[in-house]
Image (cartoon, rainbow, N blue to C red; front, side, top):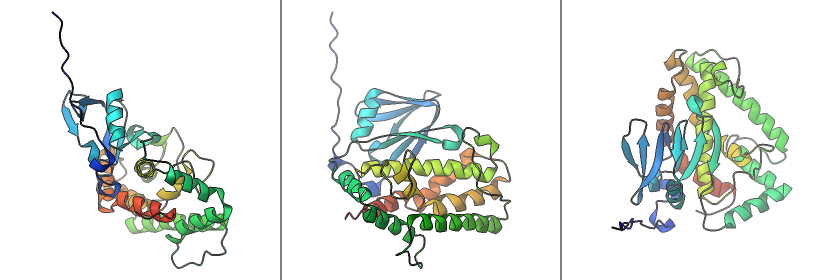
Length: 287
């Protein structure tokens, strides 16, 4: 007797049927489990066999931690819903890589490349981003190197101000790749929250049809545009959080507390909406 395979029901996902970037939940972090497709939806099977349906169309990004696997079919459905996927490391959420979601056309990326290829226009874009951090400064005649120097001094000063405010010991930003545990609590929180911020930012950039590889301030790194943008939000999303949690953790790093607090901070700050608005403004696009 020949068994007749039952047809599977799939509902085609189109860009008109999913929420806009600004309306999405920032991210969902997953570890030790498997992403699969069940019917027309994506499900998460955790290490204890529990099955959890995931609202993929309302998520901006999935951050996949250690012990995760994903089926080919799940990737197809996730990509069609324009939900980004980033692979991150254990404990520190160190950012490793990001999957590129499909975009409707390459218009935005072409315009981004045009701006980047013009030294004059590229510098104007960089000035726009620095102006958000130096609203009272006249940056008209400043070179990129000068503005980067100003930003470096501002961030170092901000670190010290936060350390004084929360009464936390601070001797500078320290991070050695591959030795996350060798850093102090504040630096570990900064590294972890920065990595999560990169993952979310990368998903927004991909979803809007831009490239993370074409930057205006940073260069010589894998994701210069992501680092350009992330610097706009680190002070509000990561730096204050790091010093506040250091005091709360009393010297004992707790990644569960960090994940919960970072998620809350990202939502309260409307992080996804801010990134989307800034990307469109800085590259001279209307929403």
